[in-house]
Amino acid sequence: MRILSGVQSSGRLHIGNYYGAMRQFVQLQDQGEAYYFIANYHALTTVRDPKLALDLTRDAALTYLSLGLDPKKAVLFRQSDVKEVLELNWILGTVVPQAHLERAHSYKDKIANNISPDFGLFAYPVLMAADILLYSADQVPVGKDQIQHIEFARDWAVKFNTQYVPGYDPADPEGKERGHAPGILKLPSAFVQEHSATVPGIDGRKMSKSYGNTLELFGEEKDIKKRIMSIKTDSTAVDAPKPTTDAPLYDLLKLMLPAGEFSDVDASWKAGGKGYGDYKKKLLEAFHATFGPARQRRQELLNDPGELERILQDGAQRARAEATRLMDQVRRAVGIP
Ligand code: TYM
Image (tube, rainbow, N blue to C red):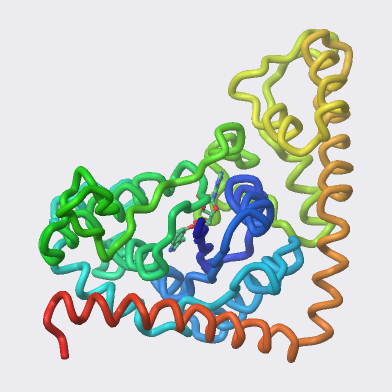
């Protein structure tokens, strides 16, 4: 089984990225051939400062490794180190209906938030599909906000195969039956963990770099504390049972505490008797307990920048080998010499 996913280097990574996606990346590296990358071309749709773009790319690589990604098991690389992705992006784009891009949630959300769209933002899902299809991924671990993008990748792979592979039957995409040919582009599936599909931010909306409501994985300790203490709560009295819906503090405790510890918290939350401040302290402790070891590893890696670059170069080489193989087939199919 081929697993592939990526994170954009458009800001410091946060616990939404971790619980929604990166925790699964680390678990899945033992279950198949895993490819993980830093989507630094995608990041250019929001980061316009070259120094920052470089810094955030490196920061994302460090974050992967600090969280437990093992470069001996998984292939870790920068999107921009495999230029074939840009070629597939173009070729795939020729079979993508414009109407699909117009209905993309990510695009519609940005428009709704008054961000004036450029071509990069509009075409974002095509490059993402190219990322996935270039490596013939089976499973793509992501948070809920990315599911539509993976469905697009599937649809467009079918379109491409139908157009260009003689004997391809969309009802038999792997060409298992006599007379059918397998597609060149493999159909991927989203792998989503239901309980962490959407991690709430400190204001109760989805945690997102663009809302400024994140808890950064490696944020300064003072800042983390301030942010946890400012998690949105209601005015329920200390003695009263606390509501469990529309309660980001409750959801975050559930996500971060070990199951046994959470069941005690859950009981007292529902019984009443403790104030929100106590629960915030509990969450802060859980944050440090969970990410303390990763913080330590990150420090070690920071002291050895040569090692980080070596890992990325090695990953790029392994990813490129795979990309070259697929692009040979794609070029032949469409008639590019
Ligand atoms: P990005 O960088 O926005 O987020 C990286 C991953 O983190 C997940 N995530 C969340 N999950 C749950 N709750 C949240 N609050 C939350 N915030 C973020 C995202 O769902 C994602 O899985 N387009 C992608 C990057 C990308 C990619 C790819 C992913 C580019 N090419 C190919 C998979 C395959 C993105 O912007 O993710």
